Image (cartoon, rainbow, N blue to C red):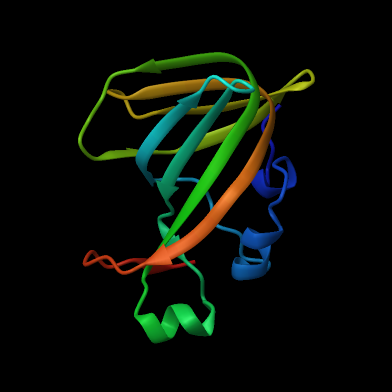
Length: 138
């Protein structure tokens, strides 16, 4: 079953909700920076840039000239992982869905594909930085 609001299925999404308010960002067209495997747990960390920037970003982000938001999702209790393909610039839509009591995170752009089946997903962090490519508002 696909979850309409990904922030409702992941833990610790309060930081994302605080920054974006009711206009939560879609996980479409995210730019993957890294996928890190940890044997403890086992865990998988997915770090990516959102396509959208908040309509009302924190004042310190505005003062610093930040225009890009980066999110870290941590899958804990991973039962399955599959990664196929690799590119320098990976842009992919991430889907988060429930499969029984497990959560599945999936992305596929035709060249790069990943699937993670896990017990839980946690927002491990959200940050911002300045990027030269323009970002559209949320």
